Image (tube, rainbow, N blue to C red; front, side, top):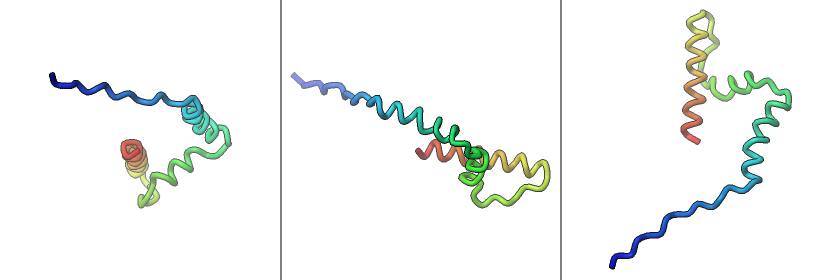
Length: 74
């Protein structure tokens, strides 16, 4: 008889981890820091200041793609 492997059991997340996952973003937003400036500083790496309307659109696309790449990387 071939033994069957037992199912992998995951450890339940602690309530502290869940609480931190909620409170950290809420704390950042409640701190009064300018979220847009922080967002631009984090993801506008190497992009020049946009001058035209099209440049502003491409800048927004650049910021979004940087945020998406960071989310996938994490």
